[in-house]
Length: 536
Image (tube, rainbow, N blue to C red; front, top):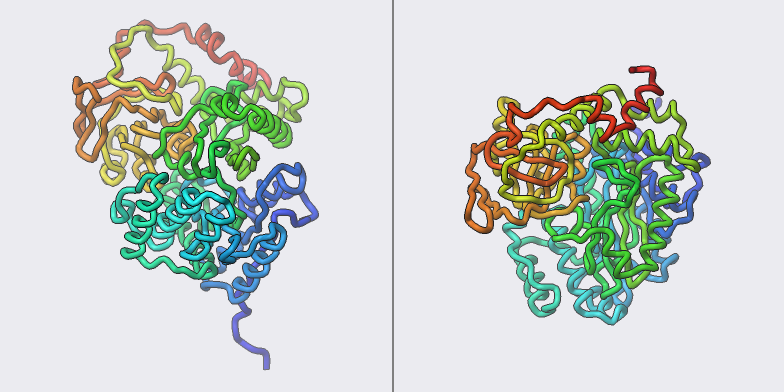
């Protein structure tokens, strides 16, 4: 008599260099967007990608439905051991430990919505081995502190407030004390394999987080969110003076201009840049500090843009003067950038984008949004005095009532126009961003998660407005001349980075622009695209 037992829940794992028989970039539904990009860069382009492996999207679906697949432990062990052999280091080795990054990667890009754990594999023994192998005690203990804090918040759900302030990385004794204090608050396992399984489960579970569900609803992503998990050898941007990390777009995602656009942060790891908590530096800083690395990165960016025939968003790390590429994906962009880049790419020699493909890439809705953004920016030449200026991260000008918490914005819903003002944004602010008309942050750079999400949603955004002192009760300018209380009307311009008190400083009485002249001057690519589409 046939058995009625359910078939075993199975898992699938592929190393980045696996030959799938088809281009890896077409396999986002299997490997997730990030995994497909890592495999494509490894196999098709031969770029300097730290080795690793991908646990498939379907494995996540099976986990969410039925729990941990019974064969996943063995597969993870097999691929982790192979990774260690390739690099000459052992996972959990007390003398020269292999450390891992565990990152999400959904089929559709969800920047910052799903979880990440870095520096995994450190414990009280391996941190000593890392210090000895690297010859840098400060670096080793900084990595251990980063792991303990990230594990506590991501895997165990502790709040950053509960964990308290971070000690300066240069003070090794203070960092040791910080680690001991955190481990007294939460139980961080010492066994690396237990750390790895818990981190993989945390990434799987993050598909059901409030921020992921809010992003799914706003992006109209159908079905249940699931993600691949990418387990990758760590590389270290916090290791010495010729180390750093950054995110760079092959073209300006706000305007579409053909120039590199992004942020760089010396002696840091990737989460420092995208979290919006650090004061980042323009990407040009890398060229000034490490010109040979910049030249190599610029070449990589050119190859990626040519290969994908699109704006690419690239995360990278420099470890002791050596470049590593950690991620590539098609970059989220404003409507203006979508129009300009599509036309320029179709007309540039060497880029395999046809006019028909350019038209298909930019919908009528996006073209209309680009037209509106350009005309709004030119509506009047008379402007009041801005109370603060930050970085224009996502173009457009909006007016709304100030709110200072994501929960407050989410509770207000769509009943009125709101501007979300935060000291810094985290993925937990996404539900509030989803119902706001604009975003202001006191810290963060052009490639922080807040900036990337705002551009993708067409929300005007100003980041890094350091002249504003912001807390849960309101904001004030550093010189004390101006205050913003909850409910006050504020206006922001996501192109210029300016912020005003009250309604639109251009006012309703400004001269009406000559639309044709404005568009011809500021976005001539729109007319070109419409002529190609026959929509004129």
